Image 1: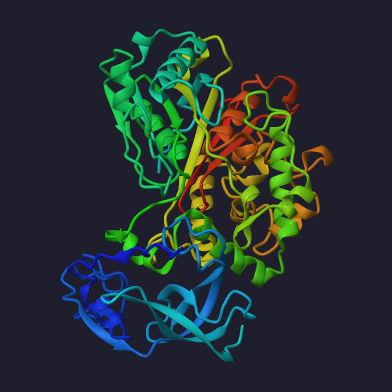
Image 2 (image 1 turned 60 degrees about the vertical axis):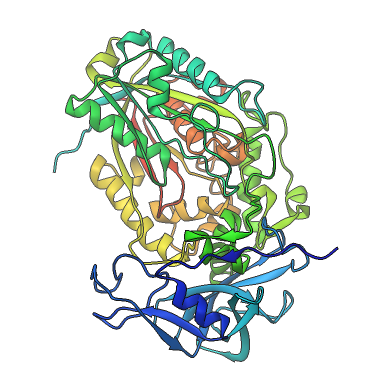
Length: 145
Length: 397
C-alpha cells in the first residue's frame, strides 16, 4: 500500500520566502532589516533587536550546522511517515546565526553513529511538486564537544 | 517586595476516580468534584465567590475543544454551580496548576474574592490516539514541525533528554529508576489508575521506545479525572474543619530565547529552571532545606531530573546518578519526591498528584502514607522552564 501523503506546509505571509527557497533546494532564513540577524520563524518582532518593524527579507545561507541533539522517531503520530520510521530528527545550530536552531530529518539513517558536535550540511526532502523540507546530512567532521 | 505569605490557605479538596475513559461527561464529574470539595471544606456553594483553572487539553491530536466535555473552564464551572462569582479567571500558559493557584492566591490576598475553587479537569478523548493527528496540511506553528516529521510532546521531551544522556552519560537504566519509583508509589494509591500495578525495571527496559530515548513508561497515561481545591483566607480557614495548609510562595518561568515551536533545548530548561527556583525561594523566604515534602513533576520521567537540579538537590548533570543511587527511593529513605505516585503513577492528572500529596501530608490527612515530618511542601508542575511550583506550609511562618 502506498504511503499516505505527508502534511505539507501552508505558507503564510512571513514564511512564503522560506518555503519557496526550500522548494528550490536552498536554505533561506528571515533576516531583520534593522539588525541583520536571522531568525526562524519570523514573527511580528525581531527576537534579536526587538524591532516591531523588522521588514523581513529572506537571506540564503549555506546550511552548515552542528548537531546539538537528536531523537529517533519510531512512531510519528502523523500521516505519511509509516514507511519512514525509524528516522532521526536532528536538532542543529546553524553556523550562519549562532544560537539559531533548526530541526530536520537526518538523511544518513537511523543507524548512523551520531554524536553531539557532529557537523552536518543541509539537504532537502521533497514532499510533492510544490514543497520540499530541509533535512541534514553528516559531513564526517565534528567540532569540539 | 511584598508577597502573599500566610494570607491564603487550602481548606478542603475532592478528587474524582482516575480512569481511562469515564462513563460520565467530564463536566458532570467536575461539578460533583467541586461540590464535594466545597463540602469537604465545610462550606456551602453560596459561600464560594471565585473560580479559576487552567483548562488546557494537552493533546496534539487536534481534537475539537468543547467546554464541559473535553475541558472545563472556570466560567463553565461557575455557571454549572449556579454561582455568579466576584472573581472568575482562567490561567493560560504552561504549568496550569501553579498558574491557577497563583491567580487564586492573588485574588484572595487582594480582596477580589474570599473563597476560590481551583479545579483541574483532564480528559482522554474517547476516539483516536491522544497525540495522533490526521492533518494533511500544516498551517501556522504546525508548518515548522509536521512536514519534517517532528510532532508532539514525545519528540519534544526526547530532544533534551538525549542531549542530557549524551552530555552526562545517563542511560535508559537511570530513567527507569524514575518510572519504577513513581509506579511503586502509585500502586499503593487507592485512586490511581495504576493501583496495585507496580512496574518492574525489566518491564521498563523491554518497553517500546517511541522517540529515543523516551519509551511508553516515561509518559503518564491519558485519563479522565478531576480534582478541586478550596482556597480561602487564612483567617477563615482556621475556623473550618480541616487543618489549613498555607500558601507561602510560588515560582514560574518561561524562556526568552526564540525557538521553533515545541523545541526544548536542554540549556533553556537549565537556565530558566534556575530562575523559576530563585523566584520560588524569594517569594517564600524559604530554601530547599526547609522542604520536607518535595513533590516533583514527572509527566515525563526526565523532568524529575531537571527539577532535582533546578531546585538544588544536586548539581547539573548529577540528577541521574542521584536517582539511581536511591536519592528518591522512598523505601530506602530517599526524598519522598514521588510519594504521591506522581503523574506516571496516577495517570495524566497534570500537577494534581503533587498538589494533592502536599495538601494531604501538610493537613495530616495522608492516612497510611502520612509522613512524621510534614511542615513545608513543594508542589511542582510541568517543566522547570515552562511550568512552576508552589510552596505550602502546615503552619504560619
